[in-house]
Image (cartoon, rainbow over all chains, first blue to last red; front, side, top):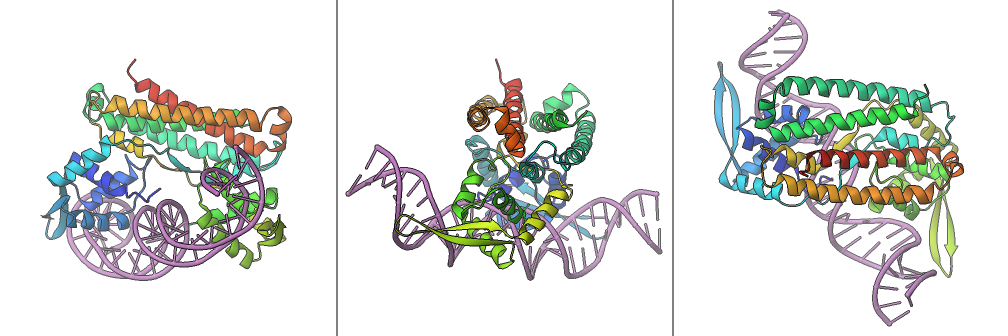
Length: 178
Length: 178
DNA sequence: GTTCTCATGTAAAGGGTTACATGATTTG
DNA sequence: CAAATCATGTAACCCTTTACATGAGAAC
């Protein structure tokens, strides 16, 4: 992963929704997008400069209050074209998953290893909490059908994340001693 | 990801099962472990040197045929200790997932976008193929209960991967037009 | 004999995290 | 007025991939 510089496309996609600052983009990676891609501000700000140098985005300086300077970035036509090309082309690679917990399970040799049940319990707690958080988000972000229609893609990926967590918890419970 | 150097622990875990060469380890990342962690030989060989320098593994040169040199690596007591410590400690971080396809969906704004259905179709084909492959592996690697009992962790993670793909396909089909 | 798999390495480049650094604005 | 959040950047370090490089053994 990483090698194909997908971050640039994600930033273009976010800016296509509405002009935003680097800070806003950082928040998007902590919230709606964080379930499927991660990036820190230290990666985002340099990328914004690169994209601007390439003529795919531009920015407008705005000042809030006394003198807080913000850079509001937005797409250029070239940037929009590049975004459309990316979304349209196939995504032939399967999801890259790095799951340290599942890997540890691989090294548990027998069903009666005393570490197994506590490990499953711990993960179940983590994923139940995450599931509750995602469900909460769904009810606040998509209270009615109108909200879904306006941001269908967002609805889809939140639904996907919720089902993924549901099934993760189900799987853990399958092997939890009752 | 990456930052915590989990690769070293995975290699220790693999060598704990049986002494192996770098080539064998590379194959493990393509097969049984590849669903949950990825690493190329160019990362594995240097790591073997590091682990040996740290006194956590050793190797024995073996010669097959005329002069094909192989390095059979195995754990030292120190390496075994480090492995046990890793498996025993908590894994408080959630799975890191980078899914380019799901991200693209995020940028599809409406249910009638003409790109949506072909995208779902394409992914369904990919994940169905992966699912078939994993099921095939399960029947060959675990033909009976005895095989499961001997490598319980391996059984667990293969089962997890299969269910994950099943649910991914189910989710895609939920939004595929019939 | 050619192709595929086995087998081991190194180098370059890029992706990604953590830490360093600074300052304004809002909230309690 | 202190703490949390908004806001922007850079530097160092490590992880990871792609490409370069080489050679033996097995299978067809």
